[in-house]
Length: 437
Ligand code: PLP
Image 1 (cartoon, rainbow, N blue to C red):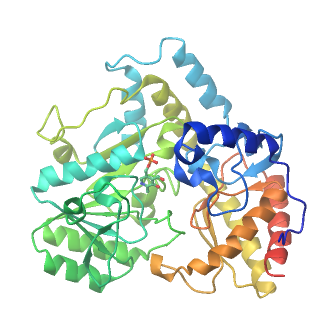
Image 2 (cartoon, rainbow, N blue to C red):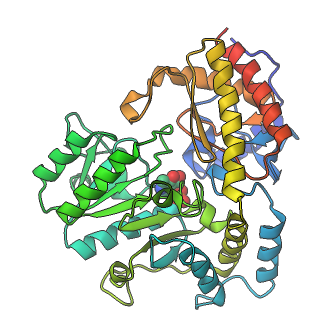
């Protein structure tokens, strides 16, 4: 039974496309969350995007807060990015040989990031993480990896593991097709839990090659960590000869040009990037000190390669996007805009006594149906996702698009105007009134 405060938008064309897509792709999609399994209705097939707006196949228009899951910090179809891509494409799309564009993007990053000295471009965040782990293992000559419950690092075999029961556990695979032996090399502990971390380092002394963390965990809600915990983690890794990997596929170039490393002023040993770095094209990267990076082939013994790595068209998009981010006041303006928005939403919910919290950092936000201070995956009540499902439907019907899962965060881009945010606030207020009715 519909609880909706507004009639549902037409999804006729999207539904037709989805039926067809199901003939071609498992579940009708090329990445699972797109299938709208945890929200209401047929997945929306998107036809175009411009600035903060997207349009679906039925002609419905939305203010978009998914922004392709983070890469589009300048919004959709940014003219500078588009023009640079078209300019570079005139000369061909791939050579499998070095180009000056790779130097240009690397220089743009390394000149403005004191946390890494050398970088390697790959084609996705998953690839960046997979390579960073191999590098850490090759460098330390150890096998074990420690990850945190609730952090997502792409579909890397060794990291598709979840915690078992107990303070410190070997991972249990969270996907079929991963040998148990792989998961046995991965230790899983809770976020924000010093005791579990220490116990892991005691239990597996001199065996842990790397600890990997999203310093801004943003794939299972937004599980903001205290700086003190991240600093503690840094110290424990140093004391144990373990490399600390910051997975900054979301936080890199998002919470500031230097990402979470710069935000918290903590120097990890390896950083992975993705999303924003490619301006909407498939780019990932990992970087470290010159010394650690010298272990990568062809300089060192850790093999890693890619036919389309450093692809010129993708580099062009990255160059154009990152150039904009370096403009004076870019992050200040974007973050202020986000803060104003999230504070207004929180004020409304608090005034109405709704069990609803907005978590936010930089231009990332997460809506949670809770009254708790959530800092670890286990703090999220799965039952609260029923409320998100309603909220999502109400917002879609009011022209606001959030990523289709209550565990996903939202992103605000430089293209979101005051008017967009005002409209969105009103849509959220009305929707919350329906959800809590
Ligand atoms: N690491 C983090 C923190 C991510 O958020 C993601 C994707 O959402 C990945 C890695 C994997 O990146 P990709 O989807 O580009 O493979």
